[in-house]
Image (tube, rainbow, N blue to C red):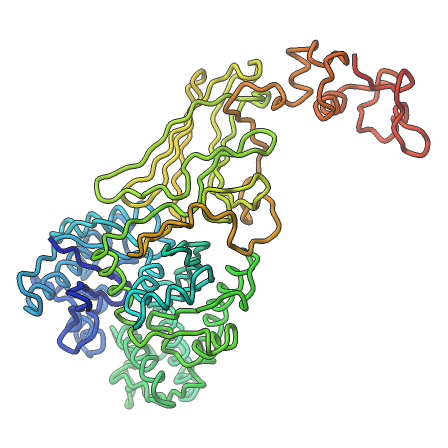
Length: 606
């Protein structure tokens, strides 16, 4: 049974399938992707372009019964559409089912089956929303074989459809490639490196704060404001019922038209209520449009700079910027990308509307499996790291799970908590050095007996990755029966191209990372780990170990200097009784600040 590629987008949706050496996409009667819009009229459900056109027609009461961008509603318990409470999963299922029916009705492919799909998702789509999307597909009669990030699918499709596939791989081998996917709902960025036939995600970033729908909304507000100012219309002049959704539709149309023209008219009949001239008519130039949405464009471009900066990369280190998504057609966005990377390194696909779907179809056709791109690690005491899941691990597909269980110790239970920190190296691949830069993923904290000796409190950690590519971690303290859970959806993956090579797993280093250190995002909690995988007294803080094992600090046993210093730091001075960190205690130092040694020191090893 053939598996199709399905790009269920915020604004438009499209199914594609590979036949021989070409991709067939099942567009609508206008040859365009199917709008992700649904209209409920009584017992009738209207989906696609006909539903979208209702947004632009006057007097239809479209605000109440038309749902635009239903994917954004996933995660809400319910919404009211035309006064009827509906489940967003049902609404999404209506759109998915319609797109599926259109493909089946096309008769372009003989004996076509649209029961299984590789489905693309934004990089920042949370786990529960992915699960709900899977439910919606099942309701529509389709199963999701595998999720793939939208920009990764676009890059896969770009490479697989290049005129000389082998030459393209040689050209970009070991090079950084940035995929810039700006659509109606989200801006997705993926920084990849192509290594021996593997597309490896180095870093991802996604936001729904600058999507194309927000451009339309900003344009709608500004156009109405300028018309009111020009006609001296105060707030007492009301817009007609359902007028603003029609203006939103007109602004979206104008934004698209201004990609090809320098000036358009935004016209909405019967916009104002109670006026002799109720129509809204506004001449909009391309310059006006760019000024109205400049703050959104600046925010989107800044995401690129932040992503590269976080990886210690410059724009000059990016060999290719592949731009896709509807917003990439805006001349100002093209110009800004050219300024960043140079025109020679920017490729704006002439198939921006279909490239993601085509890429998903090629992933399905090649049976390309996702692999974990970076280790998932547990931070241990004394700044060491233990791999939990190793880079290269094949990711689960439908109805599969990858899981591991670990038995651990609490090194220092003094504060009554066992503290787990999940980390991921910035550098892909399994061969990671202890001082490599790491990204914080999640914290889990469980209660332990604060009076217990080191290593007496046993802990466990379960980690798993499910069919939705969500990492779930569960930490437990066996004595206190504490439990903590975390869910991580922003993992990076590698996707195998059909070359048969897997050399990236043996690479020592192939990226340009910033200085080595553990890093935390603003607002994240930095903790000192007190977890260990083995009983090793070196891992116990000196002041804690001294309470349970004084013989360890006998100078004849040569205790480690660091633990000796930790022990002494918390002891009062034997001469003056002050804390060791009290600047008034000069017993252990010479006047010049150098430490004393021998019997004259107030703090010594017993």
